[in-house]
Length: 573
Image (cartoon, rainbow, N blue to C red):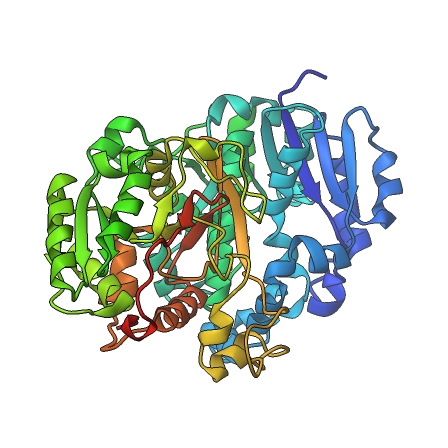
């Protein structure tokens, strides 16, 4: 066999016929179709329970097939575990069931009636991605194909005509099969109005879950996008099936997720017929569509405007110490527009700070008083908001930049302390992922980003809502068993890894976008904010799916204070 694609599939008995009374008994409806499916002449990676393995080997062998044994409990406690509780919570929510009206179709649908239905169909992308990582047969393309596809597609198309052998020539990135869908209130149970908002336009078609996939490099990207969308929509109480998420992906990025349009009935046979005839015509990319570049080059970054703010107070020596660290990583001082925010109350310090600002080409702004750490942070946000800059960095004057002398050294979490070309890489990441903010260091002074420090600072009712089994704060100090940060996906740009999720907001250096700044500091303001205030607010907005954040899996910024002011001079605001 010399075929550069692998079929990925899975099958489990959910007792659908018994629960839904729709005549789909496993042994009569699914196994005969699975038998036909197994006769397709292609490499296969199959996710199945142990009870089906013997059935598979009646028609396949290890030269063309890999079986990954996965029981239903493995899906619940492993593959789908991060989304399980929220999925079941929505499934039991009367408001969700009523989206199709009292006694509407959703009440008796498989996604409502069957505990494992959505966890399985919404894990298809995860299984496809895992198979591409295994790369057991060393192929470049991977396609999910439902094990029961011959219910609607002629067996001859797949087995005799070998239509799937023609797939690769039409797929240079990732393929979905769409079908027109004129929705009003919902799609598969997913609120239509909110689906349109997330997609950025009116959703005009839905993408089938029975056959999809593409090149392994794009599967990796699709899996990250899918995971993020699934996680954020479930957190908002939104759920349909995997096809709802696929539709959002295809509408948001039609240049990546290419679409073959089926008829209104959604039957895949139109596509397999086109494959048999070797005449597949994908939908053109909309002429007015301008994608955010996924590969951002130096020229693109050079055309961006980025501000870098340093907040200082009363010790020019401390400011110079931090600037000296930046001189050893000159991109910090050469590429952004520099702004010095001065909280100093000492007149001699103010005079020296002005000289430093002039020497190093900073815009100098005295804040009129000691506005505190958070007052200065808010001032930076408001100055950026009124500027024409696209992104900005915020540093306090004791946040130094590690240089090449730290090459080969690691922080206490075992992460790199020096990253060459950091400035450019940070821009590439935040643009590629459309993050609201990206923190520059995983390791901080007192807390690291693996600890969900928002747990200490949210209101008690929020703590009880999201940590019902661990919602009591310690009487004094920190809790060694404080909840850990809920992360999503690890990705990398230019060999530098980062992880997104419910990343805690702190005043540590980060790169922040215009819309991220708007969400965190502008839309909602506090008269006297504390760092804990923003921490709590951002966490709650993340839970609503409104803020998307990440942190580098590296620690290139270091806290290094050499001058200390009196405790009574320290102010938050």
